[in-house]
Length: 587
Ligand code: ARG
Image 1: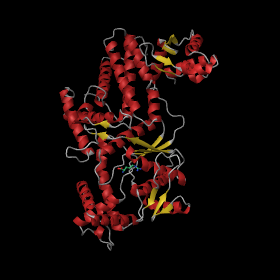
Image 2: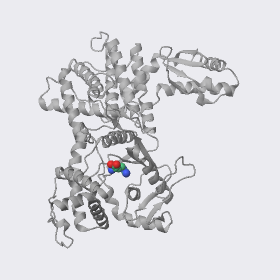
Image 3: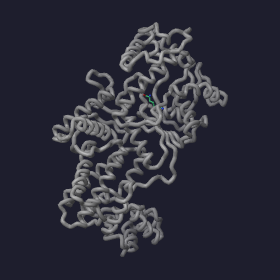
Image 4: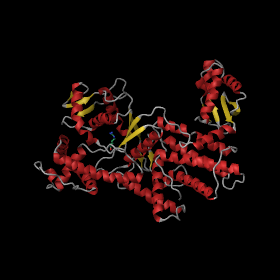
């Protein structure tokens, strides 16, 4: 399967090599001056130095080589030596039929599939999720879909924050409210209750309460630190309590993630690797990977060429506890033992860049992972209209659940305003509104390159016009309705014969799918998928405006256009699925 761009590149590359220049110079691309020609090659500019000739002279020679090429309708030289190409219509038709017949819509799979773990989501037990977790979830989910589609074996892991100081805070806060629970009795020998002693509401109240109290009161904080150390040392009652906290949190989290359509293969957390920590620490000490420093044990990770010297990773604190970096290292060990991934991607905000740089260097230093097999996939912040990190009106952190709820309400009113979904039964209407809400949130996030910060403007995100998720769903629904009508009239798609300019333009878009996915995959950047899907929807709109489908009298042309519409729909839905969006049947 060869894209049009690849076909052209092969021809032009051969022409360069025929005149004694490197074949790579023949790389073609979609033109940035589509008014002149749809494809271009800039190789003659790059060749000039090598050939010791003016770029235009090189271009002339390449052009002479290409004379009479049956794939090319025109070859022209523009400006100082750009080569512009227009392929013959049969190139478009051939490629379009190939894409239409392919259930991957022209997108090839990787030649050597790898096992890739994606660590994303990362919510913390008992702390409500905020918009930072939303970005991680939305970007991470898109990447897992994309990597899986390209053929890798993907294992996603939510990596719960369920270990450390916040757990000590919770334990001690609950103890002060319900001191008689058996979990706090150090001498208790019996079985602990299977019923959790708290609900998710309790947890969401207890945590902020404890955190605030500990900030004010050093004695309170010391208590929490002690409980944390005891928990990590394996105190039975505390461990039982932790298991309840985790179970209760997971249940609530699953609801949020289901509503978002985000899936995780593993629901592991920091606490799952606790038992690996003592051995790992001993090993690091024995091999001198770790060294003592002011009562603590650290791994020195600074490198000479660091712009800013990277602080050592603290493996064991001076109080003897394992920290965030320690659990991340133990998790790498655990993953190596269980999944043995070729690559681990960590989808975490860029504020944690130093942390991951420390962890990665320490892991490489200790031989836990091979160089370049750990990657921090960074992202920026979601901001409010003031350009600062998004907050609630009261100034608190924006809870994910509230944000999803608000998007759902806006989606409903937007659908009503647009007169959409009126004839749907109430249940279906809500399901459509949910899809619209998710599309709004996810597309707004993913359309930016991930390190870009963006302003959260729900009203704009849920609009059916402009570059939005709901616009894309609406376009997909429109094509679905055309296909349904055709079906009802007994009309069938047939062979694609490209005749009109708008048809060729649509095929060029369809042709670009594979390249867009490759780019997104290589840069771990779903915005390239967004860009593609959006421009495909636009190309379809122009095609549909210029080329009637159902009303077309010529049966062969009608069948060809129907096939084009069907191929577009498949690619649109495939592209949308890679950014986590589903289009409804009707709206
Ligand atoms: N729980 C962390 C947070 O909320 C994110 C976890 C990211 N993943 C990791 N392996 N450290 O900031």
